[in-house]
Image (spheres, rainbow, N blue to C red):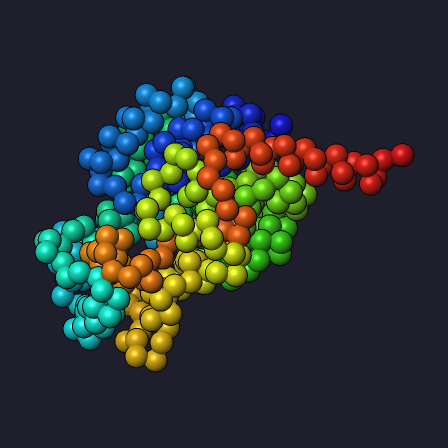
Length: 369
C-alpha cells in the first residue's frame, strides 16, 4: 500500500497499533505496520527498559511512543510532581474514599496490605516530560500526544530529533489546535474508540477533520476500526491510514489482565460505556458493576483528573486479584464485538489487509465497466 504515511515512515501498511505492551508494539512493526507504545503506566526508568527491549526486538522497523500531556487538569499550578502528588492526595474527599472501600467490600475484594503505589503516573505535564526525554533518546519515529495538543516546545523538541508528532482529536476544533501546536499527524478519533474519547462518531468526524486541517496535515482514522472494511472506509473518508488500539488487547502477545481477557472475548459492541470512573475524563470501558456503581445514586460523583485515578489506582490491582470479578473492567472500544478470537498480532495485521483488498476489489467491481 502507498499513502503519505507509508512513504513518510517507510512502512508497508498504514496501520498504527497503540498498546501498553512492548511485545505487541514490536510484533506489529515487524509485520509491516507501526507499533506505538503507551508510556503512561511507566516510570522514566521503566520506560527506558521497555524502549531498550523494543530497540532490540523490532528488527530495525520504525515504532512510536505515546504520552499523555493534558492541557487542563487539577493542580497544574502546584509545582513539581512530588509536590503535586502530596497536595492532590490531601484534596481527595473522605466520602469518596469511603464509597470506594464500601464498593470493594461488597464484591469481596480483599483489603490492601501494601503501601500506596504510584497514583500520578504520566497524567500530568510534570510527569510526562521525563517520559518524553527518555523516548527521544531512542530511535523512535513518532511521538504521539494522547490527550490534548502537546506543548509547542515538546513538539519542537521532537522535530529537532527528526521525530514526527501526532495528536489525537475528537472534533475539528481540537484538530486545528493540534496543528497550531506543531503536530504533523492528526489522529481523528471517533466516539467508538476505547479509552479517552469524544462523542462524535468516526463516520462523521473523519471528513470534518480532513476538511478542517487541509491537505498539508496527514489524518489517521481512529475509533471502532479493527477490520479491513473499516480501514477501507477510513481511507475513503479522506484519512491516509488507521490508528488502532482495542484489537491488540486480545492478541497472543498482549499482557491483558487474566480476569479481563474472557470478558473482552465475550463482549458485544453494546457492552461498553463512556465513563469518568477511571480517570475523571470520559473514557470508554467495558460496562461492569464498576461503571454502574459510579453512575448510581449513592455515588459521590467523579473527581477531576488526575484525582479520580489517584483515588482508584491502588484498588485496580486488588480488583484484578480478588473478589467476585464483577468489578473487573478495562478500557476498550466498540470494536470489542469483533474481538472474539485470540490470534498472533501479525495475523491480525494480515487479516486487516486481506479484508481491505477484498473491500476495494468489491468497490472497483461496482464502478468498473
